[in-house]
Image (cartoon, rainbow over all chains, first blue to last red; front, side, top):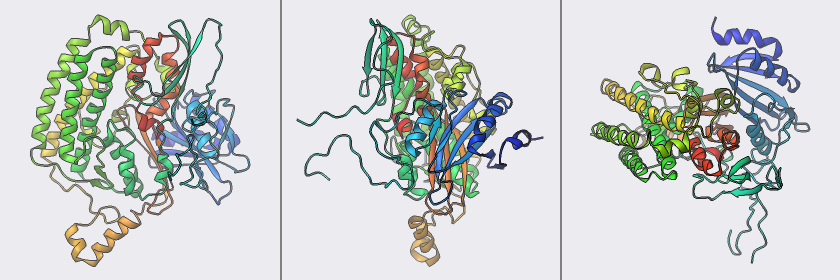
Length: 158
Length: 407
């Protein structure tokens, strides 16, 4: 049986939906289901590398945000994508820092860019932006041309 | 005088664990921190107790900007992620869009992209090794290596018209085919490469100073490297033969003969050696690809009007081609709604593009899984516990590229 089919069968019970697209196993879960699924992926199924944490802003939809994780198994050499929808009022998911060191930086980026709160990550300081930056620039309602310069422009410039 | 500029960062610690320790701020514009990186370090004498690594000084809002341009228009932007091996970024991005569109590139383009990606990998590794050696005082080795790198830059400029950021990939193909005599010059450069890299091996490999500065410095184990998301030469330096070109073959890598060099203990010496050996493997691959290209005539671009521009002569003479051209420029290529994650083995590690399309000619979201950014997240594991002077070679061996890290 192909690797992805076997994996799909063994995690289907932990996910709301499981499908394969472009060579990746895609698992949709409720926010509360992230940690149980990730524990199973890591400890039983060999997904030892957390590749990426990001989010999608589906503005106008409810729940508005979709947090997206990518994992890679260095034994089976396949990827899995885990997705969880969170609301604008409570954009909170559990942090994976206890399971993957790499989550630390990537959750910081996702937090500043989309305002997703990672429960359990006590270091959500800005990483690509700076202290005091107002708003979350990758949200669709953050105007692209909005500027928040740290150093004021010289007079007559603009 | 202007009011005081607020501190852009908030350090993780502002006092020392011991009264004899000192806090030192390094960067963001220290000449030896290749990119603009800031490291707040607690020192016990010359020894680093702990570090807090900050990046973001080169953040240009790449992902925000991408949501405002057509799929084609992003190609010059992705060039500016890892500007030491821009073509690898080009091809990874184009590959992701093509897979989402269901476009398969022509065999010649597949070979050409593979060849150019390996050529770029050599340029990237040369940059990294040359700079790291220079920081340890090895000026001759630096000049030998950047000389070869400059031959490569000039040679790629003959093909693309630019030295560093090429904008050479196209969705469904490439900007143009090879000019006459390009492969002949390529072989000349590879011969020079063999000569000068051989000299660097002779100067450096068994050099007492180099070994003392790099052996057992910045050590990371395989398990820790994986935990902190390390991929590419750094993960391989720990002894794990993980390489996307072998593990999940893309482009033409399944047809090529090559090895995956690994290190022994994951220190700075291993990272130097893994990169040196990887360049040799790239040269070996390029020579195979030259033979494959000779047996694989054009075309370069797929015959698909959803992404490939029509011939200029037709644009001027036929209404269908004119409108096709106009729509591709104004609306961009229509990419079916969906999402995709495609990763190529970049020079620094797994370079992934996560694209979300809503079916229009402009991406809904473009996210880059950049190896440099993830590597910075675990950099403190390789810095803490070593000497302050080791910070420079260790940081050099990570090969953080600002454009890719900060996006």
